[in-house]
Image (cartoon, rainbow, N blue to C red; front, top):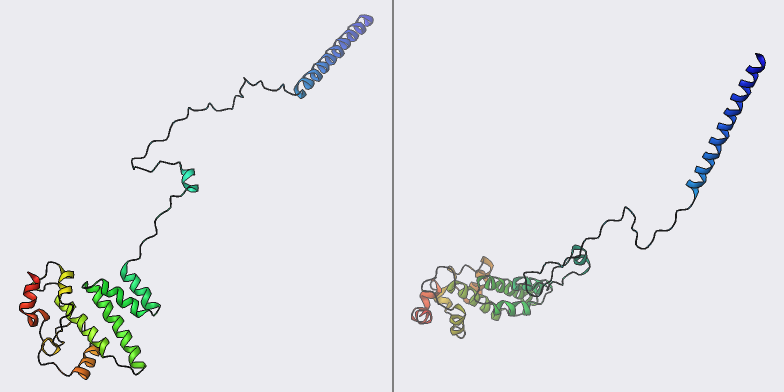
Length: 227
């Protein structure tokens, strides 16, 4: 009995050792297979993660003649040049005043006569020029006459004047050589003049006889210009 038992134990032990050895060989074979380099992909074969290429489409045509649509990437690298903004004449006058080029500033104002803003700016420039002349003890009579003329023109071409010329620029040219009568027009109706201007006028020209709107003093001459 004991001999048979020993044989059975030996057979069971041998079977166990054989099974363990077989499992060990299989594990080694699998490890070798996993560590082997993969064969290179053929040119006709695509990897699974490669996205399918979409057919190229032409960009939509712009509705503006001469302008083609661009992608956002193109726009960042191909900016369309913008034309430099033109400087408006009031800003040009300011630049000239700031640079102390008063003669050029006055010339530019005169090119815009009889616009109200141009006449106002001309008055400012003339006051600056008169201040310079007074500081140098020089005569300001020509500048004061120009200032008074600007004030009369501002009164003639004010909003609401009756009658009113159809072409203000042409009307101004017809008055280019006309001498305005200070004694009749005075200064009280001329809104462009300030207190310092009036004091200078009265110091040099005296007190006027009357104060009237410019078109009332011009009378028939102004009526003919406005026809």
